[in-house]
Image (cartoon, rainbow, N blue to C red; front, side, top):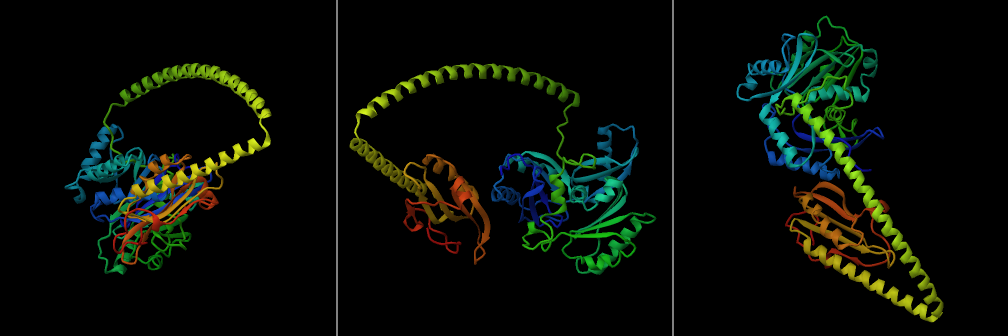
Length: 514
């Protein structure tokens, strides 16, 4: 199935130790791709420690899942600062933005970092806003521009998580009846609670956890006290507890929440999420990542977008948009006329070629009638011998080309070149290992140019680790049709890596050999 038009969610885990990729197919209603790779961050400042590592991590996630880089993406970052505030309803949007930036800068976390903010209206005068370091937003945007990945939105995890709960049906009854429910989200460093009527946010609380990691019971006590204070006098039909913490025991926490009748627990860690590597996991991916995929699917839900605004005048944008549409219609009309002209010319050429083909057919029939069976068999034998020789030349040329382009960080395990019939294209399967998938992808163009059909692709890419801790990728290069049939097969020519020129594997690298 083609992945070109399917949106992608790139989720930075709340625990700040993994980057997760999710792709959802709306036509089948199923998750198409899901995987994750480790990538460390600063849990306090929300800064990526190594920009180059982040770039390579996102690139590897796209390559491993064979997703084109032009597939649009929604980036989900961990929430860590969300507040409610009352402001005059008559404020313009720019006045609100200025006021909220000033409000966020009063807090210590933004004393030295300019905040990027977005907000939603809870009622006529009450706003819920969230903030994230602006410099980090700019760094993420530049990364996606560098990778040429269209970025649809940058959202924060709390709001994406709420959308994920709705998408999975965890609160379907409450959404349908617009009844009251509550979400409690726990991470290693923060506490977030949200009371909702259906899909509408009523009230929230967000606070850091002040206790140390060595005192889990004190952390649970602090969460319980904050939650009791937040939900005082509130009655709701369901409580959903999402535990993103690696150190807080869910059972110990639930023992404190004895006054809730309908309770759902969702643990998001390496034991419950397949995207974190668990083979018998409860969930294929995180709620935050799934909510990012559905960013455009639930317009009635509250959503934030932290992509930096250009500051252009909205009326001016609409004017140029209308002008662009007008000229687009004109260009479409011109293209249509040119296509009609080309179609007419092609029709004349086709008619002429048909007439020439009929004449050649008649001449061939006349010549065939004058040739006896023995002469015809001799001609057919010569044709077959020529086809076999041509195929052998093609096989040799392919092996020579492969040996000349193999780079030093790539080593080959098996090379199979086969052909089912003398007049059919070559069937190819090359298996190997590499330290970088980009070098493997770079081999496709010269190899395809060397073949008649030119339909080779990189398949079965997977990350692995050797016995001495060396990270590498396993891969295959094969025909698209052969990949569906289980690899190259048939009678023909086969070549093993021992006879191929290429780089030697570095000491300790997985696989060994040429």
